[in-house]
Length: 162
Image 1 (cartoon, helix red, strand yellow):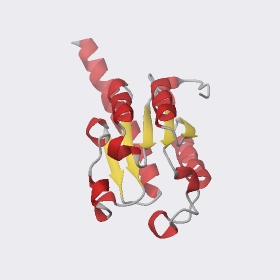
Image 2: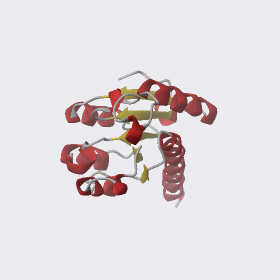
Image 3: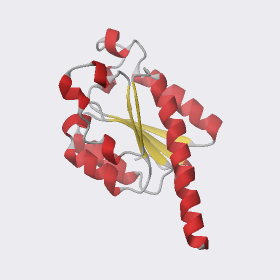
């Protein structure tokens, strides 16, 4: 994984299977914005908000799990698990195992789609969930991760003071 200067001010933007095809795969459902464009937008917003955004994508569940593990101690993870949201138990367990807040994001409104997409095994252990906002959802998810991280740090500081 990329070396970051300050892990506590770093966010992992992690995309799962088939998201490398954004911009060309089913534009009616996912739009025409490419993954590279999404990464640029989120990285730019991260700079505005004072965090470093590290981007990664994999079609392999194991590689996604490894990336989440490597983000331990970071400010958080913005994760679009793609189809792994519906059956990726190893991915679910990785999210649950790290202290960094993970906000799950989906470009489409999964509840307006096929029935099998209505269940997420990863959402119950995520710190937040954004769906149906198009690629703008990634920006919302970054803001949510940073809010959750601030709340987590505040709670930890309060617990130490007591």
